[in-house]
Length: 50
Length: 423
Image (cartoon, rainbow over all chains, first blue to last red; front, side):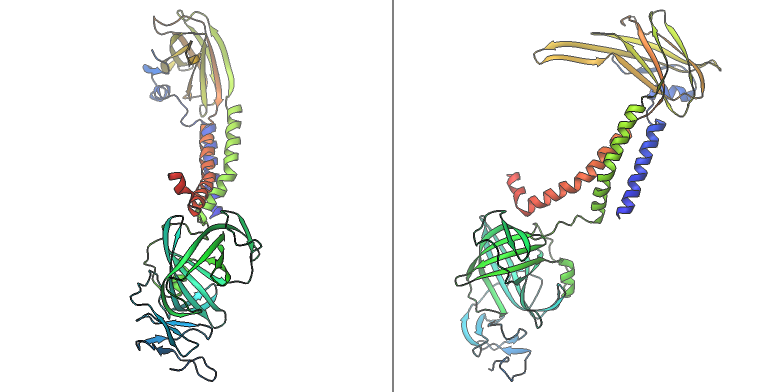
């Protein structure tokens, strides 16, 4: 049982390390959506209060 | 009636009650002193021709899974249940009851199997006397039988039910003072009677295994309490998760701190746009489309805000890949609680470039009401995220702590200290 849990925790640590290096989920959404759509256009407010 | 254990007599399997004539199993050895009729409550002297010593009618048999005559293995020894004794006690103002089953083994003699709130324990007399006297002190150490016990509770036990063959001649209502000490899964009891003091060594039993050994289906209610001698058994999975959490929490924490240091990435370019009304542009290369890039703005706003319109253009294709805006706001002041601040003089925007190559960022004031201040623009590449590792470190730490927390709760229930907390 301990071995299985150690393997699972190792995989989780590896996945978190990979996600951290690759920056998965770290993009600001509005910019990311705009970049993926490949076009410009106002994409809303990012941070702050206007 | 003859004594079946007199020299020269062969052992018989049953006798008839000398009071009511009911057949009673004779299962115990010669040392058993009394036979209590299951039907009429007559207490007979086994060593004096089963003469009637007392008679207790209408006794209510206490709850329990066993009956006289059942046999099974307890702690590796084949045992037979030969007698039943019901006990009541008042401990710290609360009434408790349990059932003692007199066990007999031809090779190991007499001992007790106790059923208490669904817990099963085995007790035997011991000659190992405690190093301290018979004074009770809560959680005080009591060394005996080669073990270090802690004093658990003391009470006066009173007999409420009698049945079968017993090693002494009991009377209904007899009472003894008992001091119990524990070192789970073991216990040590000092039983102080009117004429003598005895010492008992108790072992907590696996309920399912013991009931199965006696051929009893476990249809009884689960325990509602933690027994004094009950060991804390968290289960293999929880132990493994806690152990792994102990190892992995610091690993994830160190990795997270490492990411915090090196994950800020490397600066590609840094410039100051003086006139944001006129606007400015910066050209910079981004070589890793699989990594996060970061645009960091800094303006010396104070009790004001600045808003910027930005456009990110891929230089080779002249395609606008993103148009976005964002602001910086920062306020500070003093009030009755002291100084306060709100907001920040920096703003960051993270993105993944759609392709490697040169990019141009244009920036200008995006709102007429905006403060007009020079803005420092910094572009960084290879930005890493430490949030996942910190989150995982917190999860692993929770896994490690959960066993400690569960054990603490278990011990609090054992010692009745959770009730005090609830109150």
